[in-house]
Amino acid sequence: MNQPVVMFEEENKAFESRKEELLRLCEGKFALFKGSDFGGVYDTPQSAYSAGIEKYGNVEFLIKPISKQPVVEHIPTLFIGSIGAHS
Amino acid sequence: MPIHNVYPNKHPAISAPDLLQSLGLVVDVEISVPAALSKALQGSGSKVPLAQLGDALIDTGASCCCVEEAALHALGLKPIGQVDVASPNGNRMQNIYVARLSFPGTPISPLEMQVVGVQLNQGKTLSLIGRDVLRHWVLVYNGPMGCYTISF
Image 1: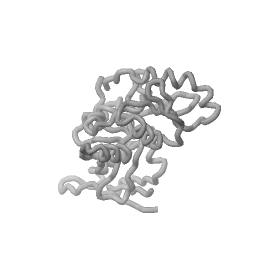
Image 2: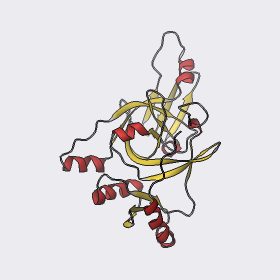
Image 3: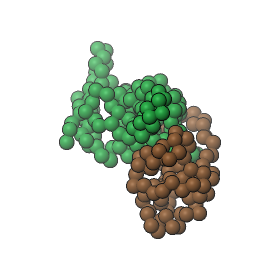
Image 4: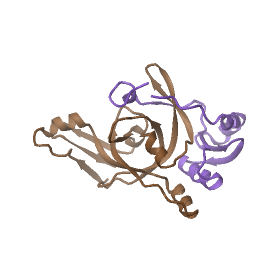
């Protein structure tokens, strides 16, 4: 699987600068960022997406889960040769 | 709870249990742009991209849903984040998108959700349905009958 280019550096930096406050006030929700602009906190990624489309249009913006631990997904099918595994 | 029974397409030379074992839990899927984007495109007089059609494989091993990234690009969708995906050789970063998944010919309600963009390179297979969806379903694999049931 090809690695995508690392994106959202500015947005991640903006998130890190607010992370403690966001964790204290709204852990479990989703924060919206475009560049260094903070677009608010939403209950679901879908509602954050709708807000992002309305505020910024169909461009890249970051929807970040407000969580202490980074999310790691497990999709073994992609890596064991069952389906489309390639490097 | 609505119940949806799935019988793989009949094949004269292969028994239903063999066919189900070979194909796995496959349903037709339609991947399209989320309602918010569709509305924005219509509002600006732009054309809404046509849905991408293919197969979705129900994958109890996957923690989340994935969609072929080329199909997401064809819809004009932009990433809304990135996530680490665990692999035997360490974590790999993949883009995340919001997309709408619907299942034509079934009573399953369309889902608008986060999906991981992946490179499936597997012909008709457009999507893996992972445990983030299965947590809302009851899934019964009936091997001897060669069918499966989804209740949701």
